[in-house]
Amino acid sequence: MNNVAPKLTSKEYEANFAELKPALTDVAALAEANRCLYCYDSPCMTACPTHIDISTFIKKISTGNLRGSAKTILSSNWVALTCAKACPVDELCEGACVYHAKGEKPIQIGKLQRHVMDWYVEKRMPQLFTPAEMNGKTVGIIGAGPAGLACAAELTLFGFEVTIYEASKLAGGLDTHGIAPYKMQQQDSLNEVKMIKRLGVKIKTGVRVGKDISFEKLEKTHDAVFIGVGLSMPADLKISGEEMIGVVNALDFVENVTKRKWKSVDVGRRVAVIGAGNTAIDAATEAKRLGAEEVFMVYRRGREQMSAYDFEFELAKRDGITFYFHAQPKKIVGKKKVQALECLETRIVNGKLKTIPRSEFKIPVDMVIKAVGQNIDETFLASIPKLKIKDGMVVVNTKSYQTSNPKYFAGGDCINGGKEVVNAAYDGKRAAYGIHNFIFKKK
Ligand code: SF4
Image (tube, rainbow, N blue to C red; front, side):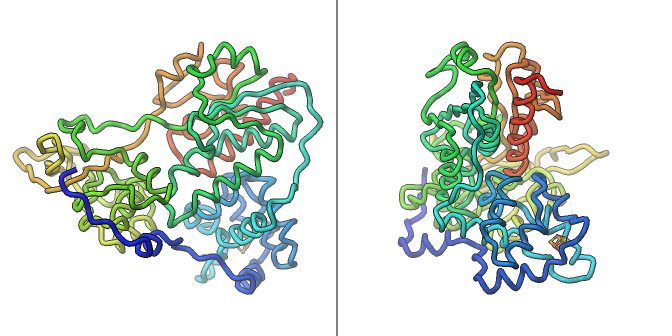
């Protein structure tokens, strides 16, 4: 990198990456729980992709039954602490709360869920579910992200012996490696992994399926296999200069920040982040909080087309990020190291995005973070016979989560192209039912 931003003090890093949403006190949680109207049709529950019985878990908080509340939450969602902290609640449960219709603040469902799950972790996660007696069947799971973990946990309740094969050293997938520390701590995700291990799930980390264990062996060892591999291949910009020193992938950058070894993460003084999704916003705000003097978000369309949520956009604005809308990166300029990002202006003509000829302009930067999306690893998945992939996603039966190869099931980002953790948690749980029905020939 041409120009690395000066390192901050440990205190400054801690302050910059402190959690943005503080926990509720016991008194505040009780008061908030008592505001809930316990709606008979609970629109909040319908809006939650895992359909947690929200009004019931809140009611249990109001009666001081936090253990019962945790059980209600976890019986729908095995990664409930991550979801409490990282879910876009404004768009989901809280967005559907009836208080909106009264012109009042919705119930803080996310914070109440966090209150319960924090209590559960503090109490050292007492066992709330008893795995069923072993049924003699075994399931292999590829990937220890939220879909794989949820599938594994649910399978233990049916009596399956479950082994997860995870290529990384740490389990948890994006919950462990890809969520900004000011939203949640890596340890939160690792606690959830611990909880799932306690159900008897074996997690083999640092094991690459197809390399450290062959697909043939996997298929011989297990009665069914669940694929929860997410989207592991960063999309390229397909412009010249991508190979230069100072060009990084957003997920690699975010993963390094998640480790909390702030001083070891180099960031440029001037940084361009290309993309407009939530990961792009995370990368931009993290770069700023690591000490970059100026951070630019570069997006070829307008604000209205950004896929990032409003609250993420507002956060980036608050952090002083500069937005270049209608700017299409043309090339990365430099001599081995990044010196600038050259872009073309764009406009919409007859509904189509067009670049404007001779509208080139340069943004001088030392670092370019690519955040234009992730793809599935098609080469890896091609090793599974008869596995159908369409539009960059593994095709599954939407009820059973079974793929075109009957022995394989799949869920999470690899079947939906990249949604929320909560969607992956739901997929994993539902796929466990699909696997159980398949193995025991139930309809
Ligand atoms: Fe409570 Fe709001 Fe859900 Fe009604 S919609 S049950 S008030 S959280």
